Length: 192
Image 1 (cartoon, rainbow, N blue to C red):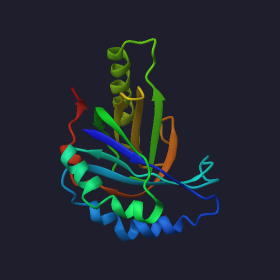
Image 2: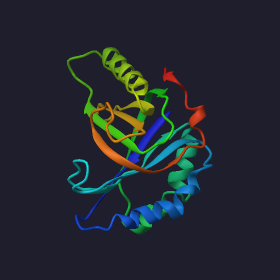
Image 3: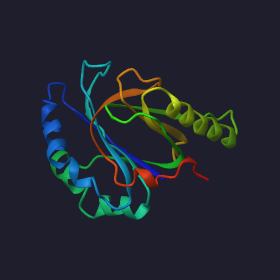
């Protein structure tokens, strides 16, 4: 599993309905993308639910590098660059994925944090895997994932929720659409 995200921080007075319309018109295009586990189309709105900014920030979990590369180099990603300029794309190697009991994706939480230098990598990863399991087991969670960027030694936890009061720390996003053609193929549990 590979995690990926880019973020577009938009002007404070940006009409976020433009993004809603974009997702409503184009979101379905990845509903059957080969190699994609899932893509959550996410937004934050300035002044709502603690957000200081307007932001469009899709989050992906890929089953295959081939699918991810086909998206990035084969045209799927080009529309973002054409409309907003080419954003930096963050990538993380998967550590864990766990399903929850929720069914309707409404909100997401993403938390990035440094991998502690005073802990062994094995212990830090075990904590990240355990946290994914804890989040997925919480009421209203659809799933939780953990991944790591070894170039920055940063972990990311990502979870999807039915409600806007998740039992997770991090940035809260509204989910506009979920494309999940390969969600059932994402490997459960620890990724090694």
